[in-house]
Length: 151
Image (cartoon, rainbow, N blue to C red; front, side):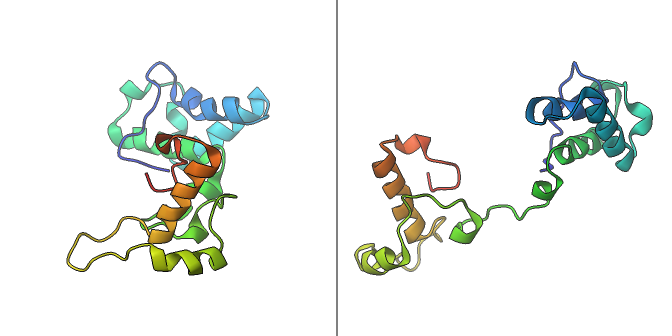
C-alpha cells in the first residue's frame, strides 16, 4: 500500500530497502531476492539508483521505491480494495464469534437504531455486536480486538 511517506530505512540502500521484506517474509534465495528487487526498481524507473541511500534521492523517487517495496511480497494485495467504514462483512476476515444471519435477525430488534440528525455511524450495528461477541468469547481486552472489528 502506498502512503504519503515512503517509510524507507535510512541506513539501507534502495535495493536493500526493497529486499528487506522479502528476507523476512519469503523463502527466496538472496540472489532471487536481489533479482526481484532489481526488476521492481526497474519497473518504477529506479534501476540506476540501486546503491543510493534514501537521503540521496528526491521525495518522489522515495515514493517510487516505497511502491516497489510494497509490490515485493504480494502484488495482488497492494491493489486490494481498502477497508471502508462502515466495514462490510464481506471485506473482512470472518471470526468464529461472529453472529450468524439467524442470530442477527433475532438480535437486531434489541440493538437500538441510530437516531436521525446525528453523526453518521462509523460501524454497522451488527459489526459492533460482532466486536462485543469476539471480546466476550475470546476473553480478550477490548483494546486487543483485531483491526477489522470496531474499536
